[in-house]
Length: 137
Image 1 (cartoon, rainbow, N blue to C red):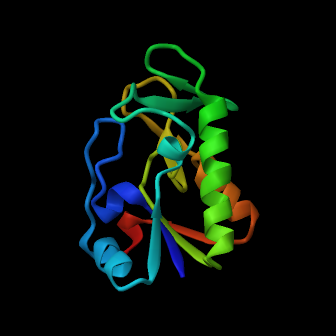
Image 2 (cartoon, rainbow, N blue to C red; image 1 turned 90 degrees about the horizontal axis):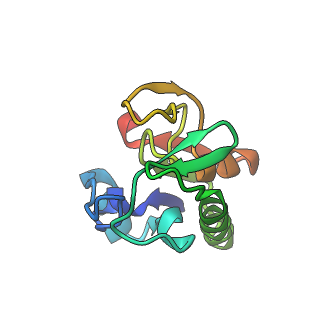
């Protein structure tokens, strides 16, 4: 079983209230091979919402508010769902502060990328769950 970013599964849950549909992910969910989660929504953040980026160990939105607690809460809930469903692989939205794997935005809101992982992606990797992004499909 795989866990996937809900926005890739066609669910309108990203910060803009839109989806980022990936047909391969949509098909996996439809076949019952993957479970869609949105850590940001699970953490209690609204949709749409102010965009956020990781700054050091914190997650800060573009309005300057610290939303680290919400990202951690939602990522822990998404991790629990992943573990409860025996997920051994994840396909997550690239560059996201929750789901990004390998590259994330640098916290300046200038579309600059740095090496790093989103909060949820990092938790999955720490549990030994393989993480890829839609770009790796």
